[in-house]
Length: 276
Ligand code: NAP
Image 1: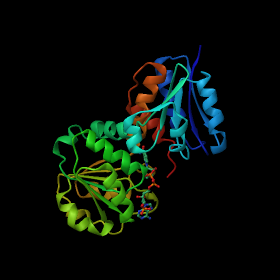
Image 2: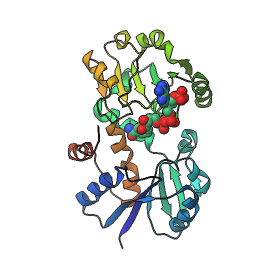
Image 3: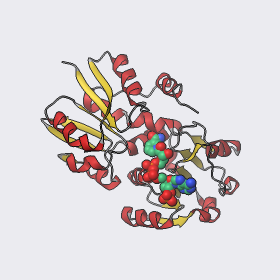
Image 4: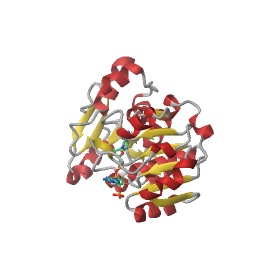
């Protein structure tokens, strides 16, 4: 019987997940399918009934359902709870288990793009305090990087997130960049700045040590102004597309029983679909 998986969202037609999983299904010759399904918020409960009835092995969840599915899952793993969002569902014996693979995608991307990166990181500067920042703080903590400086336009949001995550996470307004940058081993942009021609105006990258690794979660454009400026100064950079590809690995393995690989060919296929 064909094993079926999905990505649900509203709208959903922009999703690259069918291309990613479709590529892996073909590569491994698996009798499976992965489809994008538009599920409106009011139809989410009904969709979960289909899940419990065994129609799918599982799937991905994207905007606007990442928080709403919490209440509908039969179980949610502790890290997804800490992150506050579920992006992957696995159905076993009529029960729906929710997890979050974004933090694994972030780590997998840096492991591939900057091998050994975590060893040199004592001081991380994370820009942004939304859902993505939460996943990144959890990811850093899981690699023993507990010290993070959280810079955000709305400092109260950063403050609330820092207190929630605990440990050595402190919040600052964006203007504190000039004070924090000289000690930064890692800089992560988790805001949407970089998309649609936007850029940080007040971040002087000359203040960073020459060893700093700079990464961006934005992947349209692939080379954001932040990454371009960092590369122009000779800093190591890792773009955000790999995070999207690597977050898909654990889900595919759970549904189809094979651990797929993020290859250069897959990356090229997805890159070709990015609209700049
Ligand atoms: P979110 O919860 O809406 O948070 C957005 C963040 O961006 C907030 O910190 C917000 O600051 C900040 N921001 C937005 N516009 C700004 C501006 N003009 N000036 C300064 N700060 C601004 O969004 P999210 O879910 O965290 O996602 C953030 C980005 O990460 C998105 O671009 C998303 O596509 C990307 N992402 C990529 C991947 C991947 O696989 N590569 C995975 C997840 C997310 P305030 O708090 O002050 O509003």
